[in-house]
Image (cartoon, rainbow, N blue to C red; front, side):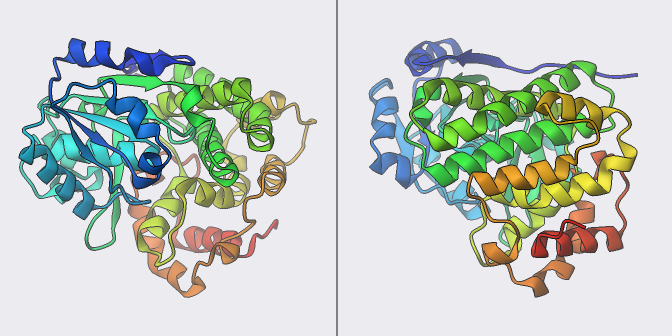
Length: 379
């Protein structure tokens, strides 16, 4: 038996940001807290949001590249100081995930750890989660319609906090907000969207509507990512990449896989700041090779979506795409310490994405995938 349910209200089009006041009114939010980052403040994009807000609003703009437990507590303190009654997430996946953590801890007692999925926390997250409006400025994570947040705890564990109550009440997707996105960030977030679509399509859970969304999103990302990278002002490419990002997150209600199992602990443990989408791009070829024997006709369907010849290696095609758009070929190029990798095996196996990988993972498999990604092996 398959339980199928979707999701939240989405305003999607060029200029959709102008619907923010109506969304606030519908949700009866009068004192919103905007969660964003310093880069967007400096770029002047946050001003586009604040001019649409009531005077009684607050701002937290110190979102780190990988959102942390400390940042959640700092933002919650700002929420309480200003007696806020709703949250607006404005930014990439980091800002949106951090805002989800704020909406949770502003309305639920701590500690944050107690709400982590792998620690049984999903049942502790209630409908009391504060109203959240998500406005993405990248086209990658799809967190604006996702039911979870990835947050790094003080002990460096990067855990998933997942519940239907964590889905933003509104998503406002305006491709125009991505026009100024730098080339490498366009590439990395685009590969994040493509990975979401591919991994959720390959997940063994039964959800044909999600499969259809994921396959269309994968086709869309494959077709448009190169154009978005080469010409960031191509609004049509930006529109399609934001839609692919949305589709990936709509579809990953059926689960992800080993790419994310490997990315999550490394992103939290490394002393080097590692972009999640870039990590996904590096891990994806090795994981595809590992999973292909257990995926039935799904690889043939992906080849058709990507217009690849029968029998072509999707893993090699992904690696080639990453190279063309300027992403690193392996973990070594990203500055990862190889000695760290064996220490992450248990965390990868315990990650919530492992359960929906199409092929079961043993400790030796995880280490081998880490090693392949470190060297960029095509074996």
